Image (tube, rainbow, N blue to C red; front, side, top):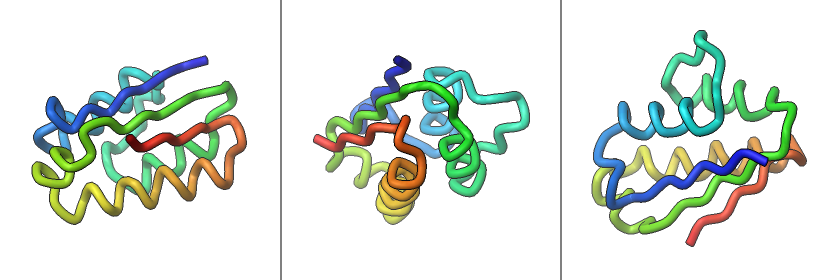
Length: 89
């Protein structure tokens, strides 16, 4: 199982966010580093993966509305792909 921890204290911009996701989940080279590409990669993921969000308030402070959109995209992808587990704390 792959585990990706999104720590709002460490993720201060979109670039760091998408780099963290891509590295921890071994996304393909074509990953575009945006929410549409994230959804595509997660719904096409073929192994168990857990994505955890910690320090959610800090992430929202750093990314604003983008953090809310991120949570919705990951939640929708987890609903569409049973191999993805999504946990926000």
